[in-house]
Length: 195
Length: 270
Image (cartoon, rainbow over all chains, first blue to last red; front, side, top):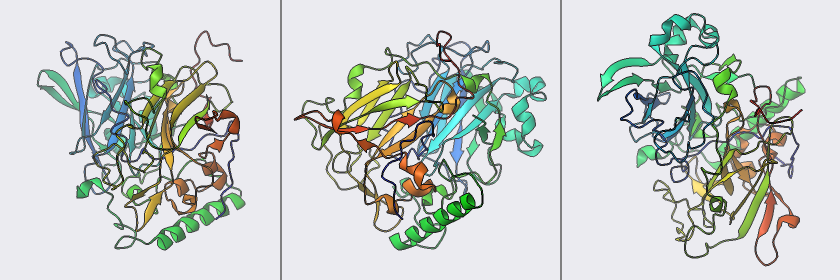
């Protein structure tokens, strides 16, 4: 197997490689999972468990979320990495725990454009050679789901994997569970954006 | 700690594989990819998600095809990062401690571009790497090579007006891992990049020219097309070397797009 020395051909995309297991000292940062402080009056808990094809928790996944604010606007504010506690930037990052769990504190997004409101979720992990995109929708917005282009493109029997489970008020905040199953029964729907 | 390591040999096969077995699997997949191209298919620009020689992928790839959709407004935007988020000193990985790290001091410089060759400006790049002995500052890394008290191996930068970036660091060492018996990763630096649209998000690894471990490494080889994976190899560039100080490597990074790229309102890219 001979390797071409290098082929820096402009405009041909640089391929992805796995995040690997050892990003923990590099990518997580203080405040990463807190898009708003927990004491924000409309803070929600957005959480879940990431599991593999055997149903085992994945303890070395990194999740990123990106979302509109409550009015459906995408923030252009700086400060995602160095939060001031008051500015909503729409971006969050959270590594899973040894139980495979993640928790973000955020706001329920409003509708951006014609789509029903959702949180864009990106999954990185050892063994995941190329990150996976999915969307987390909210049952409260179900009136908009019938006309949502992406939900409509998903087979009916798999659509539920894209909708958070509403858990009501837990510990002072509305709680939404969004489990991510990389493989197997109830495998989460992952999206390929034609980009 | 058993759960923190891959479950080697879980599937296929029963126990940990030999390098020869892994290499045979790698070569069979490359031959399959080449046959598809010969039959008129497109080269594989990205790694296969289901790539059994990399054992950790076996239970961590979706079995359903991804649902192809157009990006909407959320995906056409990206978080805004700026110089208030990242201290310029963070692009020098050799000054984080009181002393100089051990190893071959080097710079890696280049540009971040979109698919039409336009610069990706003022966006975040993060890097992380092992030290010169091939050890990460990570508690799950139990490779018995020494930690370097003067090297953490983490850097961040915001790209410039032309998409340019530059990191000063030391060359990372190769290291063993548990994918199979006598498995070694070629030396690499992890890169995390944001574009102007979230669809351009990329995490990848930069390698060094001529590494003898390339053919043996199922992570590098998970990109079945030889030309595509060669895009991950930085080039030694003597004009970037600094006399009496550091060796220079150049590596340009091309994100996907630009179909979905959100442009700054004042951006006059035609």
